[in-house]
Amino acid sequence: MGFEVKRGAIVIVFACLALIFVFNKHVLVFFEQQREITKEPAAQATHEPNVATIPDLTDRSARVPMCSLLPQKGKRRKTSATAASSAWDVFGADEREFVKLASPCTDKTTWHKYQHMYARMLYQFKHSAASATEAKPFKMLEIGLGCNMRCVAGGFRLFRDYLPNVQYHAFESNYSLCRSGFRRSGLSGSEGKYLDAHVCEGSSENPADLDKCAKRFGPFDLIVDDASHMQAHIIAAFTHLFPSEHLKRGGVYVIEDLQVGYHPNWGGSEKEQTDGLTAPEMIKELLDWKLASNPTRNCPIDNKISIGGRRRWSHVVPEIAGMMGEMLCSHESCGFVKR
Image 1 (cartoon, helix red, strand yellow):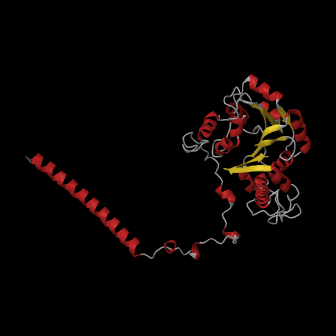
Image 2 (cartoon, one colour; image 1 turned 180 degrees about the horizontal axis):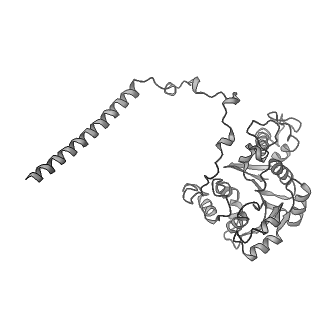
Image 3 (cartoon, one colour; image 1 turned 45 degrees about the horizontal axis):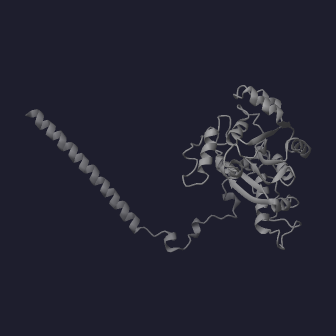
């Protein structure tokens, strides 16, 4: 009998504690609701802007440095195939395939998330025929094999797997360094021999080196710049190759790693640029010309007038803008279609 009484008392105590917990929770919710009701309505509720909350865009001291927004070292994470895109996205299947084919030797599908860019910009090459056997071969040039990385030539494998009809070529400043990393990167003997026969050496800042490579392997349908990321190199290669005969009409030019254009280690700057010294500034001016100019009409903007105070590229950007059919910018990258 005594045991039953004790057990009943314990049950009653726990029941009381549960009631107290539920009661306190409802009391807190009630007072929280009363506080929301009695406080002054937000400025948005009256459809009148709260001037105090509007940032002063002219105050440069209040701006957040762009480099503080960049992913920090050690926080890279490979994007899962499921999270790569939404099911309703027409490019979703290509994005998932791009992620699936990426090996540990490439960072294109880590926090760079280039699968979004390439699923769209390479769609015409991947789906140009009903089957891979019917697809017409096309030529690609990748500037930079990642020879200074622990695992090299990751893009080489990824593009060849993703685009079975691609004729892959590469441009590298230090190919001997790449060859020394083939074994640790898991490249087979046949893959090494293929690269030996399809690589040009030189500087992407030197037009003569680019011309020599293009005359040997080009003209190209696709050019990808994933080289030194130095702003001078990116700009020199793009402004030379895109308007030249080295890139075919209908061809695609992709520039990766544009985020470093805001970092001084790669010749970029966190400050607002006005002279077009960085690749992002060059692209902004390209967009200015593309939006303001219409080659079929008389336009008040001509080649002698700079836009937004950026004068450095006014001699070449209008020409490129006139040749550019489409421009797509995604996470840390932009792609350009030549019409």
